[in-house]
Image 1 (cartoon, one colour):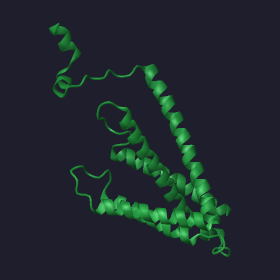
Image 2: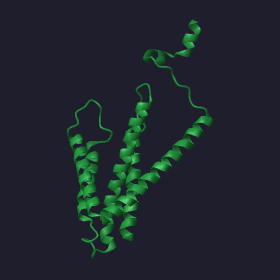
Image 3: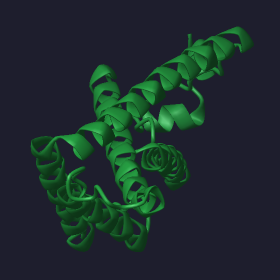
Image 4: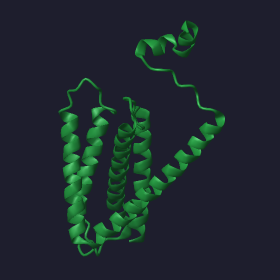
Length: 196
């Protein structure tokens, strides 16, 4: 009985009270990879669809652009307030300068929502609209992506029995999600600005 207990629990797992998890088999690893890629592709398609539809509605509907503008200004101010008043033991996932910059981008896109009305900018050339729609598309994509990541982290945390790390935790993962969402929004904004 003593030998089975010693083989079942390693010193690290005995010290922390958890069993060590065996590495996944190659077949299981491929299955998880395929499922993860499929879920990521579906979420990416969803974010791209929402970004495209939001850009169309912001340029055409005054009420929708006012709603999005107010929401972006509120979210940007909340992120900026959270960054400047952060005094917890846990460090921020990214330096304050990056988070403050992206909060400023969201506030700027909220102000652009009030300005980007098709009737107001009817005489502007497409190359003058491209930077405006690019900033707006990046902010919409950024906000949607991070909202989805936060909801996924929350849901995965609820589904697990023990406290575990979230899906996106390290600063490299946050920067990857940030870079991809901004690039996707940049592409949509650029395309929408050129085709408008």
